[in-house]
Length: 97
Image (cartoon, rainbow, N blue to C red; front, top):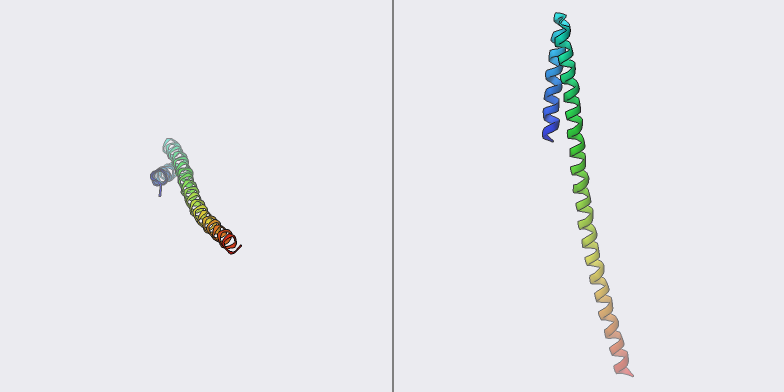
């Protein structure tokens, strides 16, 4: 989990508590501060989600590239084997003639 997500969630909870306390006591200033902290926390949490998503995409791309690399190695090995077998067949036919 991303640090920004955790920090954002904590800020959101702190803001909710302040806002609720402001509602209970009728303190508009405390309510507004709490709402502001909630918004800040939600934004920070969203930023953490974006970063985490980007990390996951990069990880998936690396894995895909590694799979392609392995496939290419296998294909090259098959191609080399096929070429060697062709050379053997050509030499065998030439020797037989």
